[in-house]
Each structure stands twice: as C-alpha cells, then as structure tokens.
Length: 253
Ligand code: UDP
Picture 1 (cartoon, protein in one colour):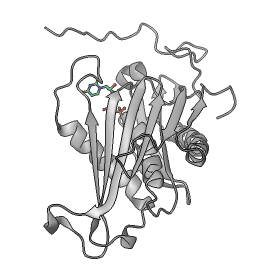
Picture 2: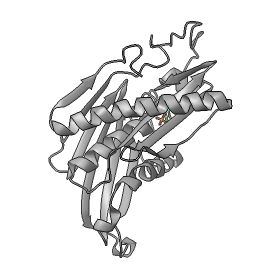
Picture 3: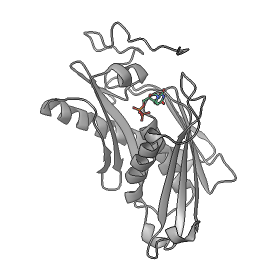
Picture 4: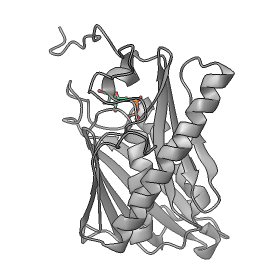
C-alpha cells in the first residue's frame, strides 16, 4: 500500500485566477540562484525555485572515456538528470529510469545550441543535474542551472539558455505551474530559449490548448524566460553569492 496518496485540491484556480499557492496566473514562485559552489567541478550552480532544489555541475572540456565516443570535429555533450531517492514525496528508486533518460536528452537538446562545440574537438563536456528536492518544473530549473554552470566553467557559449514552464488551468494561462497544477492542470508547456537570438530550444506540451491559448502561453513563456535571464546574468556577475527574487509583483510579467 502506498504511504503517500496525492489528493486533487477541490479548487485548482478560483474565478478570480487565484491559484492553490495563492499566486496569480502571471506570478512565478520565489527563486534563488547561486553560482560556483562546488570546488571540485569546473563549473556549478544551485537553483532553488519554489520547492525545487537542484544542483548542477559541469566537468570539461576533458578527455572522453570510452575513447571511441569522441567526435573528431567537436565536443561531445553529455547530460545526466538524476532525482535523489529523497527528492519526491514517495521514495524514488535510485538509478536511471525512462523519465530520467528522457529528461537528460531534453536538457541536453535545450542547452547544446548555446555551446561552441567546434571549439573543443575530441573532448567531452559533462553536465550533471541532480534534483535534491522536486516540486514540478525540474527540467526547466535544470536548464537554467546547467546554463549557469557551463558559463561558470568558462565554456565558450553563444549566450545563456533560460527556461520556464507555462500551462493552462481551466481558462487561465498560468506561468510556472506548481505540483498541483502540473498534476491536475489541463496543460503544461516547458520552454527554453537561447537568449542571444531568443531562439526556442525547448518546447513541449502535454495537454490541449486552442490556438489563442497556445499563443498566449507562448508569449507568457517568453516574458517569464526573459525575467529568468536577467536573474542569471546577475547571478554570474556575483559568483558565490545568492541572487534572490520573490514572487513576481503583479504586472511584472
Ligand atoms: N515526480 C515525482 N516522482 C517521480 C517523477 C516526478 O514525485 O518519479 C514529481 C516531481 O515533483 C516533478 C513533478 O512530478 O517535479 C513533475 O514531473 P514532470 O515529469 O512533469 O517533470 P518536471 O515538471 O519536473 O520537469
């Protein structure tokens, strides 16, 4: 018998657009970004976003093992997304599973367009995304932190990649879905952009939206991501210090 049974809240969003955690549709959960906290890694970052706690570490460019994986003309980019057994309400079985393999790929594909891979032929850049505590939106939090860790490692990049999820609960388009909204909302849409060109490098959707709703979600996602990007730049200017933002003020997004 499961020790923990999730219960759908009676009201996911009120008629006035108030969400289960008291936020309005355009409000992001509190965020903190810390860069350069692991002295054994070439680059690192820690992100606290709502209830998420995610540590990222970058190693490289370094020699590829096993050697046959090396690419002659560019760097190999490897990512590992991993959830700690204590990161979820129910103990998560340690080790890779289908979801972690998928999210490792999703994060790699979101980040890779930013890296000048041709600058590092024959080498590998390893990116570790360790979820210590999860609260929905771990893939986008992981993308933000991985991007910071790469910059902290001094990897040549076109620009930072910033990410945020948006979603739909009933008739409201919301940004940064929380656990309840991720689980019982009508749609979830994680997005990432390479900020130098604002090119979208990640866009997934898992629920129905009309054309209008999709356009609104896309625009809200862009605006949230620009906000995250401003935080990332601040975090990089002051490594080893925390950049902190609380929930958005109304109208900021
Ligand atoms: N989750 C969980 N156990 C799992 C996988 C996910 O409790 O084995 C929770 C976790 O809080 C996660 C959320 O479900 O953040 C949403 O997971 P999803 O696969 O949608 O990815 P995410 O939103 O974290 O990128």
